[in-house]
Length: 142
Image (cartoon, rainbow, N blue to C red; front, top):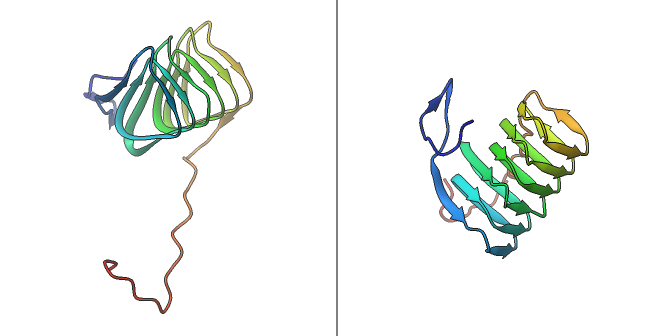
């Protein structure tokens, strides 16, 4: 399994854990992070990450009640919502998913449970480009 090593994993480098949400902590609202997030608490909201090397590690005590959008994830806890993983998803034995799982590369241990669809994505979902400013000059934009 990958996660907090920060070392090269085959072709790509995985971010070291830079943020911890400890057991007993509940966050109500959306969480956006870069790098690595280790979650042992609860997030009532969506979780998203920027960067191809970002990784969410959800411990067996951790829970997300909302959508998850990350490049890489190791799930050993509960997610009540859809999961979108652009690169690599590992589901450990205590993983409990109530929602659809969109993945590119999947590793699933015996005991993991998914109540939803498994949808292979050959490439991560693309974001729409920002609207062009035609005829408008905005300060700070070059």
